[in-house]
Image (spheres, rainbow, N blue to C red):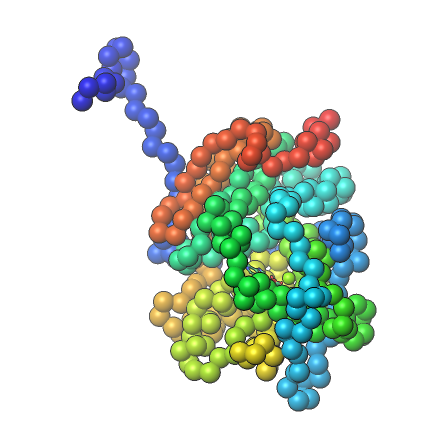
Length: 378
Ligand code: A3P
Ligand code: MG
Ligand code: MG
C-alpha cells in the first residue's frame, strides 16, 4: 500500500525486520528429563532489622520451636494482635537487588568457584526464580524481569507489573489481615534462641528478615541467589545450612478430597518451587479454620511433594518447571549481549502468551545502583 518500503530498491539484498525474539511457555514444550541442578550450597547470609537496615550477619535468624508433637492440637489464634501489633514493611520502597548487591560487594573477593565464576553467573532473588519455575502452570499473574549485564554477570530484578501494583494498592482489608496471619504463624512457631520458646506477645514486624545467599547451577547456568529463610531447626539431623532450614506456611483447612486435590495442584507447586531452589528440605504447614485458628500441623518434605500430585491428571511436573527456567536463562543470556549497567532488557510475560522483550535505558528501569557499579568497575 501507499508509504510501504520497497525491499531491494537500493540494490542490496532485501532487508527484513528480524522478528522480535520471544520464548514460549507452554508446559508441553518443556517435558523431558529433569535437568542438572547442583545441590545448593550456602555462601553466606545477611539480616534486615526492624527498620529494614542491613547487617552482614545472622541476627534475624529464628529457631524452629514447634509445639509438642503428641500434645493436643495447637492453639494459635492467628488474628491475635491485628492490627495494633502489626508493623508492615513499606511496599512502596523499591529495594531491587540492593541488599543482595551489598552482600556481594563485601564477599566477591572470597567467592568459591574459581576466577571468573561470578562473570558467568546469574544473580537474582530466589523469589524471582520461583516465579520462573511456576510460569508454565500459572494462569493468573504475569511478571516482568529487568535484566542488565555488568562485567559478564547477568543480574535479574523483578519489576512490579501495573496490574500487580493496582491490586496491591486496592488490597482488601481481609487480604491484609490474611497476610498478617502468615507472619503471626511464624511468631508462634519460632524462638529467638535455640531451645527457647516462642513469644507471641511482641509485634509482627515484616521489615525483619534473615536471608541466605546460595550458589547453585541449573544446566549450564551458574546461579547466585538469595532468599528469605523462616527459621532453622536446632534439632535437624544436619546442622549444615540449607539442610537445617524450615519453611513455614499457612493454608485453609481442607475437608474433602477435591479440596486436597486443588491444594496439591496449586499451592503445593508454589511451596515446592520456593523451597526446592535453595535446598530447604521441609515445609511445615499450619492449617487454619475460618476463624483463623490453627487446627493442625503437617510437615511436607520438599522432595516428596511431587509424589502427592503425580497420580493426578493435570498436575505439575518439576522437570517442566526446571526445563523452562533453564530455557529462560539461556534466552536471557543470548538476548542481553551488551555489557552496560544502564541498559535494561525487560522480559515481560502474561499468562497465555510467550515471554517478550523490550529495551530501555536508565530510569525508571535501570536497577544497578551507582555505588555498586562504581565499586566493581573501579
Ligand atoms: P503464608 O504463606 O503462610 O500465608 P513466606 O511463606 O514466603 O515465608 O511468607 C510469609 C508470609 O508473607 C505468608 O504467609 C503471607 O502471609 C505473606 N506473603 C508472602 N508472599 C505473599 C504474596 N505474594 N501475597 C500475599 N502475601 C504474601
Ligand atoms: Mg518467609
Ligand atoms: Mg513462610
